[in-house]
Image (cartoon, rainbow, N blue to C red; front, side):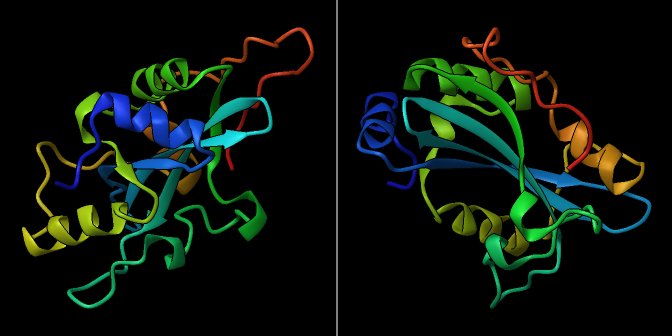
Length: 163
């Protein structure tokens, strides 16, 4: 069983391990890409990142972490865009789902998102709708549907702008 139950997803996060979800294709015209969302534990909170990478994989190469960012101007240190911060795992998952369209029943352990991408490649890179168009920075914005939310907002300014 690849997908985590909700209870197990929360336990994984509480143990200090991230969870991920493949979101699908983005980009056209220009470089085609794929995106995925990651919820990762951080000190006393949980951070939600959306990643948009060039779709350079093939039948023998699925490692999304090795793909170049869709936004060529993003440095390796800036890979991924922080879209939400929450104080508990359940709220982090809800924020990720609201911000990116992720689905509660499709979370996987860290690095299993590569298997999701592999299924996508083997299926012929299907899409329910044409990929969005725009510049790489706009495509990352498209993958994110909501601004950063942080319960400690009075202590920290929201993240904004392209990667």
